[in-house]
Amino acid sequence: MITAALPRTDRRPRSREPLRAGEPLAHGERGRHAVESRQMPTVRRTFPPTRVSLVAGLTDADGEVRTLSADVLARGYWGPVVALLALRWHLDRADAEDLAQEFFAAAFEKQWFSRYAPERGRFRTFLRTLLDRFAADAVRARHRLKRGGGLTAESLDAADLQAPDTPDETDARVHAEWVRSVLALALDALRDEGANTGRTVQVQLFEAYDVADVPDAERPTYRALAQRFGIPDTQVTNYLTWARRAYRRQVLAALRALAGNEVEFRDDVRSLLGGRSAAP
Image (cartoon, rainbow, N blue to C red; front, top):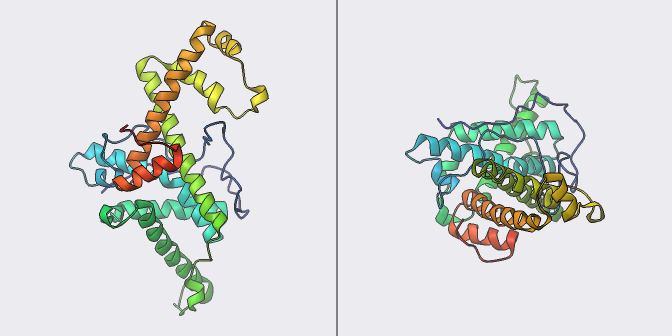
């Protein structure tokens, strides 16, 4: 059975306020690259081998690849799943996170994701269909408990089993959460790459200048960065150039890993980066 590191929703304050479209799931660092830190699994920060999607990795013969694929899939789609549950099904934050945890646990245990057929469409569409069915079952169970006290199962009206209409702003919010997840995965991978290649300063400088959530007027100058990190002024440009290229490569790797097929990958690259899809 495939397992993934899922967040522990019982270790933080539980807000019972409903989530509204446009409201962030959690406060974190956001800057030019719109990276947001959130409560999500953080065990592994690398991706499956190049051109091996997470879905294919879930059934790979190598157990390490299977575990890695499950971890990255859970991290990549945690934010969008929580947002969709909260907004589409009108759940508060805590209930949405609890239900998301139950969804991923059931999906990995019952190998639902392995049923995805790349030739039949986008993986995110497939995941959303699974999630809607899972949420509908949860709503059905909740109504049974409310109406029968857990002792009898009453039939429900069709309206009770239908998810609320999804407004355009909800779709936009879910997409925004997916973008943040991709960028957060890429930033984590960049930090690991910097640590493993002796370029930690380059990554830290990149985060201070391009990622930090500060107004442009308060963004540090190149000279201030050079003094802060103890490097010549002329090196700031070189460090940023390397980090930006490496970050873009990690974004491509994250998109490659999370896409169900080649068409989805290329569409995602155009949507997020607005350019051609180079192989990560």
